[in-house]
Image (cartoon, rainbow, N blue to C red; front, side):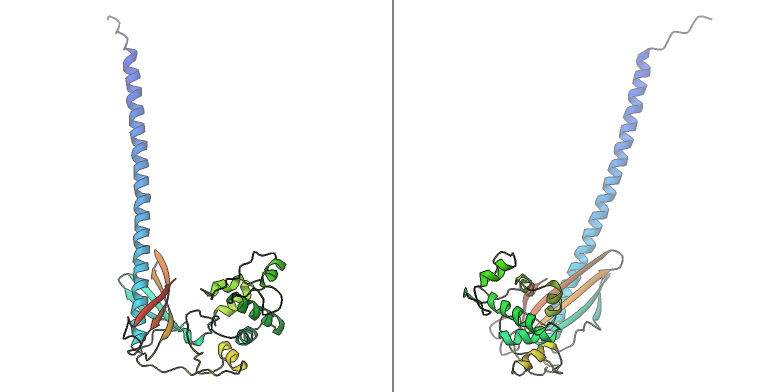
Length: 272
């Protein structure tokens, strides 16, 4: 038999190129598939989060109108539960009228509140003075000396606002306030509430502070259509089990028929 001719080397090289190309295409396909799965997962998470946020916002607004009509929404111990599509929402409402506005009360009331939450008398007087200093334009401190020196003594930049507190968090900026004291104080302060403290029992730290300062507090009104300006903090926690969670807190002012004649009966003061 005659000898077989040798195969050209070019065929072997072409086969290598084909195999290499197939490998690259397979790798590229795997990468595209993995990227697509990640993008789909992220898109699903974003959709679930948006759905939970929308449910919480809607529930908070609905709760405001329930309160406007004199209904009850829920309490920290027993929130109201509703279901919006696949979303479970727990709603609670806290009457801001049971709290003290740090912008509208005297230094004595602030001191009494601090004592009522467990701060010793000397430190309470110091903190009450620093809170009063923040909201006044004078360079002189009610505690004596200059306000700026209090900050320098603590190694802090001068932060006195010379304006009302815009949030309870700002109280944490005064020189001698600590996160632990602020956490206890926060429960009884509201920069949105107007008027006296409303507490049916008279046993809360806020009511005690008002009483110690020689002032009177009012009892809470019973259910019924809102007759004046009332401020509530509504919190709605929306959950899609195993997929998403969103918490919305809104401070709303409810205005009765007389006060709402020139505006909306429900006013959102802030979203958090």
